[in-house]
Length: 185
Ligand code: GRF
Image (cartoon, rainbow, N blue to C red):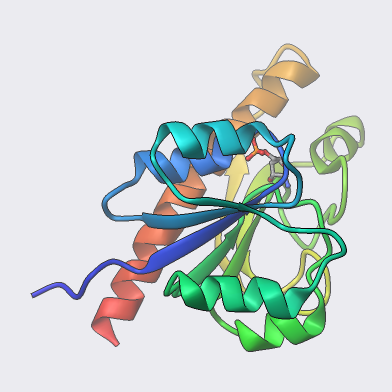
């Protein structure tokens, strides 16, 4: 018999299209909490519409409080899905091997901001990586990585759209993979 799903906390800062992809993967992806760095994130609207508990990180940031909030919600895994804050090493260590990030490039190429734009302008391959989070930003072991075929794209906007679609597929696949790894161990 399958063990219950992993309970995910999804960390967001923006529109939450990756959160939406995870919500679409329910019940395999059990999104138990949405944590936002800002009250303005549209991701919060998506979460509330889906009936998912939300929590806006109070200022000033206290990562002990964030950790306790996750424990209070019995969270098993953390997904950084467009979360635009640096996660400090202490928190990463507490959630070692239980925290993943989606990044819109073929890491280690183009870490940081504007990855799609930079890769596109330099005529480099586009893609998406879901990786385990370590103290260094946009680094850590790759869980899944996929190249995006963008040669047929007429302009940057359509290439960017293709990358975002690939992100949504990959975040869904990665929660499924985490679940099957957790249930088989
Ligand atoms: C995504 O491209 C994500 O990989 C990047 O920021 C964007 C956020 O998208 N870090 P969304 O908020 O999930 O729509």
